[in-house]
Image 1 (cartoon, rainbow, N blue to C red):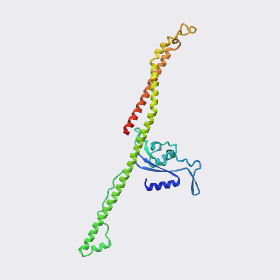
Image 2 (image 1 turned 90 degrees about the vertical axis):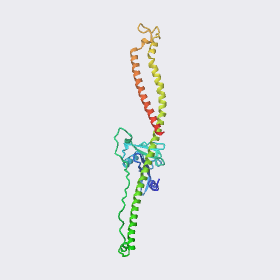
Image 3 (image 1 turned 180 degrees about the vertical axis):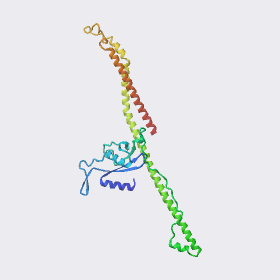
Length: 311
């Protein structure tokens, strides 16, 4: 952090402001957001709210609103990652919940640039153009002394005036080259800094994806195990449904309950309705299984893409 930034932070800290630096992944710019904490002004002194002096009253939503003004990215299209470890900021939580302001980094992403379904917003990136130096072709105006020498009848004196003009022209051209070179160096350094911000923003996004992949795998593994066990149970039940019905025909009723129409348990149930119910269950089972297999495919594709991205 530069001395200027450190001095600005001290000034904001003295006023009780919360200063958050946000790297813009789209442009590489660093937005310095100064958020004012809730406090009361009493005379000439700032007095913090007595509600809870240890809790920061600035919420992430206020940060998002300021970023919309600074970056032009609407709050609804913003993705904010804070870390490490890099996780999304909840607009409803206080910035202090995420350890801000502090040593953590915050990056801003434009959701529209990450979606293939929305139209691309106009580019906000600054155009970096080299500074073209126009060299002076004439020396600066001669001094009174030089004019007097130019009127001298002595050839050596007049030659001094010519040499002076030549040297002055060289100095002017050198100064112009120096000014243009410094401007190009400054532009290049700013561009390099912005590229570094974008590089860290990409690394933060990849780290967030890896964290998401790990969490997804952690939850998907037990779900998949339960699904397979339940799926096998259902398939076994459906495949043996007819045999279960036939088994009922071997269980005779007690003589006191038996009639001409009902002699076994098989005769006591609506077989046609049970078969229709089993057919409906099989259709539902097939549909659910196909949906879960699609979910497994998405899970595997995400894991593979994130793994390939990291490796």
